[in-house]
Image (tube, rainbow, N blue to C red):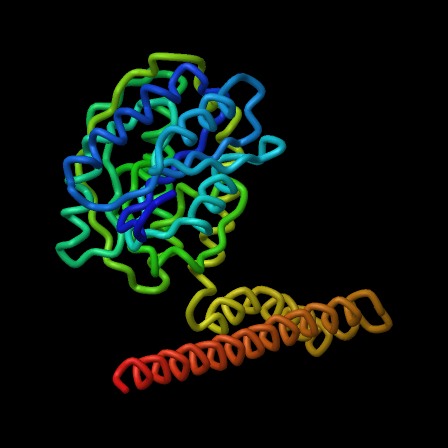
Length: 315
């Protein structure tokens, strides 16, 4: 057991990485020992079916810095990261992959960068050691698309090597494959983000868990993120924009009813469509008003709680 609370928590999801576990632990330990800071390493076994869990548990018995979380089945990288974040005790949280393609030696440099006043430091694999067709090209396309949609100027969103202040990520909720969109989600709360060049190594053991089949998941999650970012502030503007189309269509039908009575007279279908589209427009605007009220009330509660917390700290 650790004798004092750790300052840094390193969170590493593992899935069928039995050949990497021992070497990875030693590399992380060597990189953190030179910082002279108290730290903990959290291995999250994401339902491995090989010897990953047993090797990790054996290491934990011999070293006070290591903690192990076991998933009974494979849930994916994002839930594994979330589980590690939940139990982490450090003020600084580090996430990285378990396949040894991220280099633990970059962690001290990224922690130092965080201390310059940033809330999140993202790794940029500027010399990525992966296959061109199945990894590099899809990644380049995805990163440019993510940057365009989210407006966050980060070159590489998929690099798992990131360093956070614990207080900006502890209360966040992520699901599906959302770990790559963490900077975009955190941008809603105005976090300060820095991006630094990090080393990247070719995979030494096992096989990659990612492939072209993951693209459709990224696209669906990107659509979700775009919706969240768009509706995150002043949602009524977006609902009104959407409502313009049904209002316009209803006015066209109304115009036909008023000016072309000899054609549409007695045509109940046109009258019904006019009412339906107009009602849809009113419904969308009403949703916008309700969303705006929820946003206002939520912001007021957060500000009130923050003010109360500050007063308590001052006293």
